[in-house]
Image (cartoon, rainbow, N blue to C red):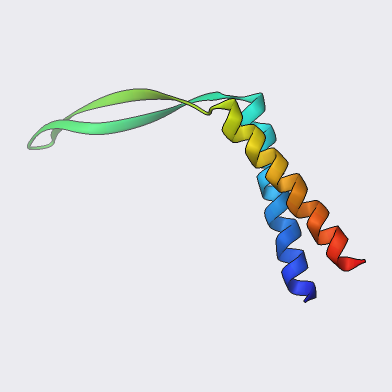
Length: 78
């Protein structure tokens, strides 16, 4: 019983951190390098940047769910 409560608290803490990070930085970019052509030892590569947006509703929901999970783990211990 104690181990499931500990896992519940850890999952809640992870969700809270992800929710706060999503609200603090709602847009992030990733880079991907692809090989365009190869001729012997010569390689031609292209780097592409892609922007990703995290909706505030998703970040807020993760934050609230994390708080609920942490609260639920404390409630079951009492």
